Amino acid sequence: MSDAARYKAVIFDMDDTLISRQRAYRVYVEEFYDRNIGLHSTDRPEAIALMIAWDGRGDNDKIEYFGRLKRRWPGLDMPIHELIEHFFGRMAAAVEPDLEANRFLGELSEAGVPWGILTNGESKFQRGKMATVGLDAIAPFALVPSETGDQKPSPAVFEEAVRQAGHDASGTLFVGDNPRTDIRGAQGIGMPTAWVKAGREWTDGTPLPDHQIDHVTELRALLLG
Ligand SMILES: [Mg+2]
Image 1 (cartoon, rainbow, N blue to C red):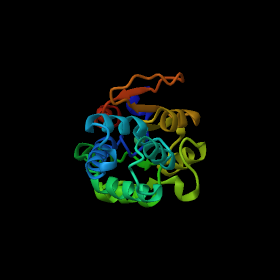
Image 2: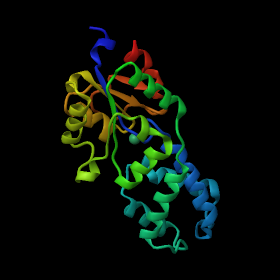
Image 3: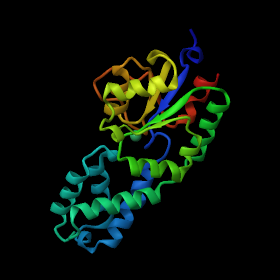
């Protein structure tokens, strides 16, 4: 069986899969440094590199993350809840559409390939980003499982996404950048996977993703033939 026949549907993670959260985070963190003199005891490039490392591509607890910043820079006097609120607001503003990805998603719809989005994170923030980059208008469905108190890699949230896409797990490709929440989660219910590697090597110690890509448009031939 060819790959084109194998995949009947596709589910995408959002951050750093359909939009560049990494780029938006860099915009946020540079502005954050410039506006907080409490951080200026450390040189700009070093402070920014530290905050990017501690961010862990967003797969972290925000209270823990900002607590770590306040311990590193005691001059950062804003309370944690205000830092978090500011973070969400600035990130939502900094995110930009990935026009190539959006065009590819439009092609999937035109070709009748069922697809949808499954994203972790806070509802208001994630839905806001979808609206900013135009994904809300083009996605056949978009699931934010935190709205029902769940999140990837819970099998239930992958099962619901597969159900909404309308085919079996084995025929529904999952595309995401996070080895633990995306790839391992999807593998857990028997979905084939494509990992957005972004220059990384697969070191998760679990079965390799079926595909490794740098950008979702590399799936064009596989999904559209
Ligand atoms: Mg992601």
